[in-house]
Length: 310
Image (cartoon, rainbow, N blue to C red):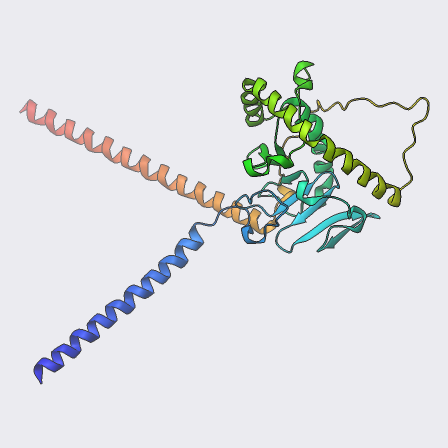
């Protein structure tokens, strides 16, 4: 009987220990989740198929060719028309012929909130089709977008390089200097070092796509005729190259305080104040320790001096 009671006590103790361990582990997991929060958002599961690979913390894309934003949190396209911002689950009807799967997309800064409310910055930094002159004619092959967080271009993967636009080194040969980021400049130098091989590859790429481009031109011409009057060339018409030398063009938009989420601002301010408080306490404690050590050393010197005199 005593053995049975002892056995039941042992089992009860084991059960309590296991329950405590489970509760502690669960609390630990929750604690880690809270303490490891980083700026930005987490919408990797909502990333659409047409978009570049998801960048951790990103919430918004910007499509400069149609001046349209995409919000991963609700899968909405946000576009401006008649002086108002419209939100829709589908691409605006006016851009129904726009190919999202081959579009140039910009991953916006993870700290920005509702970027369309600051549209003037994005229009000035990323004009329509700027990347064709900025990248394609400056020996940047396979560019599919730009990431403001890394301040560098996004490239097509090896399996998707057939979807890339044509490129050449026209701007390099003509010494047209653009204000590239450090990361993009390094990438350009790498491509230039492989220039000869890339030229051969590009020539073959262009040759294989000539027939396909002719067919696409015919299809596009038919679609354009249905939506707008055909463009006519008259005497005196001309065109000239873009002049993207300005500092903002192609560079990340600086996220100002008013462009951030208010809750994120408050959290950042609280974090900053806490860090300042901790630093002040550490400094105060250090100074007190130094004073105590100095006082102690002085007392030792006095004691040693008195002993010596005796």
